[in-house]
Amino acid sequence: MTQPPAPVGIIMGSQSDWPTMREAAEMLDALEVPYETRIVSAHRTPDRLWDYGKTAVDRGLKVIIAGAGGAAHLPGMMASKTRVPVIGVPVQTKALSGVDSLYSILQMPRGFPVATMAIGAAGAANAGLMAAGILAVSDAALAERLEAWRDALSASIPEVPSDD
Ligand code: RP5
Image 1 (cartoon, rainbow, N blue to C red):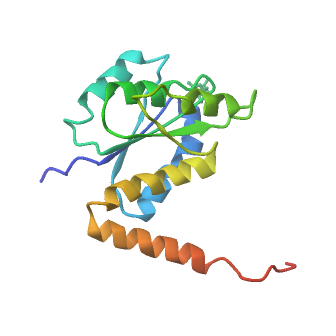
Image 2 (cartoon, rainbow, N blue to C red):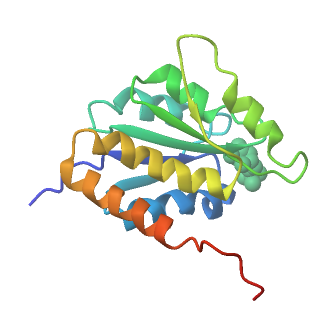
């Protein structure tokens, strides 16, 4: 039996981005959302970027999570190539702490938006949640799982601080 196409693509500029981008993957695992992962670099593999963007709609992708660091052009270039919503994750860098990545992703020109998350691991995890939220608009079972996940997080926060 053929598997339905993964609705979420997690792409990243380099293998070195994976420890960050894994946070998005783990969030989608927790919410039982299928995804694919690819290394797609705006600078090192531009043809791969173009092909990925060009075929995204036909392959059934509904959301793309794109993480990159430094001169982080991947999310924006992907947004220019496909109408599939792109969620950008600025990967933390050594030289400029990820502010370079953030600014590279954030300031898109009018017409080609990227939903930009926070720098680093929290941003990647939130990208997974954002992708799930987008899909949950038309998937009642996923909406229920997402509500449960959010409720569990709220319930895990103590009301009173502890000295331990
Ligand atoms: C970017 O350059 C990647 O997204 C990565 O964050 C950064 C450094 O890449 P490597 O030199 O570690 O492969 O394209």
